[in-house]
Length: 375
Ligand SMILES: *Cc1c(COP(=O)(O)O)cnc(C)c1O
Image 1 (cartoon, rainbow, N blue to C red):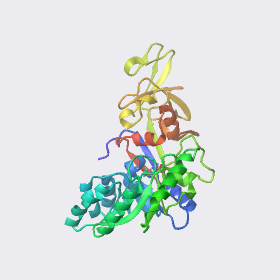
Image 2: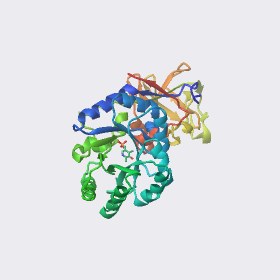
Image 3: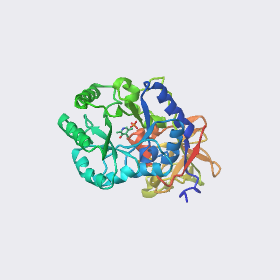
Image 4: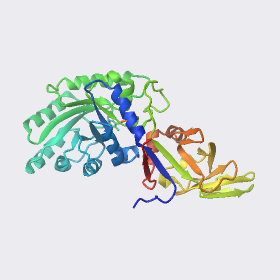
């Protein structure tokens, strides 16, 4: 049962846009480079399995997720291409990952040492991508000695480990100032000096690096936000014109109550909004439990192509808007997407909330059903 199916609030995902964005990236990549679709966090809220199936149809070479259960969900839904788990997983889960033919990031020797006997006991072999911390400060090897030790350990235990990949992650690939990016890239080259036998995958690029640092190398790209059609940099840097990304996420609801209020009438918890004249107020069945954050109070949504302010506190399940005039019940409300020739983007919401569009999308809750179209 889909919770929220009968409520009139939904996200509509354009799988055609996702395929288009993957195709654009494919055209921009170097020959021989492979394209992995990053579908962690329920495919950035777009829906893990439907997005992965669409990406597979679009011909991606593999997938990246953050955690084991996302990878297993893909396998259980028929995804057979390589799947790389980007986050650090518990050593004790090594056999479980191997059983599902998953590849995992490994960020220290301890993982390999602990996993080795567990894998050996079950005659299992795990595909490993060594994570290199070149300046992100999150996970990974930070010096040549430890990288060397990890590779030697895998060479000594080839029945348990396949050294399949090595990678790093940039922290400023979307910044106009590329000095830290260069520092990280230099560090990456320095760490790679001890990798005498290159694994199948050497990868460094996320969406931002693939857009603004095409020359940064690697034979695989980990495309996340770009595949969903959003500019990784937010508003800081403009995308070059040749990257014509199409956003895939539309968020809509409808009006479930319309009323006229009078001067002095207040709206919602805490009476933070009080009408000063006769006003038309509409109620929308979407709230902070659905990811339309409480701090979106005062921002606008689109009704009949007009901006309507969210007035009063956003409740858990509903919020109210000020309408220019009376509208029929059921009138469409657009939070993200096009309405009457006007646009609202995830970036607009992020700017208002003081965050990034990634977080706006990831906040949209499970109670908002996702419907799929292919435009
Ligand atoms: C999330 C993630 C990506 C994808 O990043 P985008 O900015 O969405 O392209 C790539 N690599 C790693 C290691 C990640 O954690």
